[in-house]
Length: 226
Image (cartoon, rainbow, N blue to C red; front, top):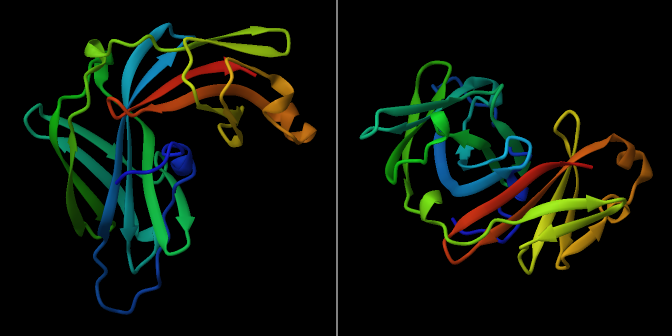
């Protein structure tokens, strides 16, 4: 599923919606999937690692309360991840319901095995829908480009080695997305990120994001203090 350069942003609040069912058993359905490998440069931890964004468009007659887990499995490497209502994010769009996460990563900061992964969407009764995703993006250790960084001078932020177009995400301390700023310059000012002064008071962190189309990988840089 190919989205615009707002790919991850559009999923920062993803969610589950269910239709009330009849008395017949309800089996969850995976309608389609969104998968994107990202290189995340964290200036606070001073490291770069691969992360995976995974979202499922789902359908379930018994509603959100009946869905219990998403399983992601890589059989060749014997790897297994689980998402549940406390760890997935969710959004309802007109006629669409999605669940998933932008924060799936490998243990010990290693790279994701390339190849096929199995998906399972479970409800509380143990019924499950199955699907597959495939990861074939360039491994982080083979990425030849310099990943950007941000420095701050007073109220001004400066981007080193930045792309021609990017997004800045502004978050609150409780991880709510407060604002999104689209930029094309190598610098931007703090006041331009949030129009509402009341929201500006609650902002704590920013991230830079863009999608490298040459290698089909998202680049995330942050967090930086707002």
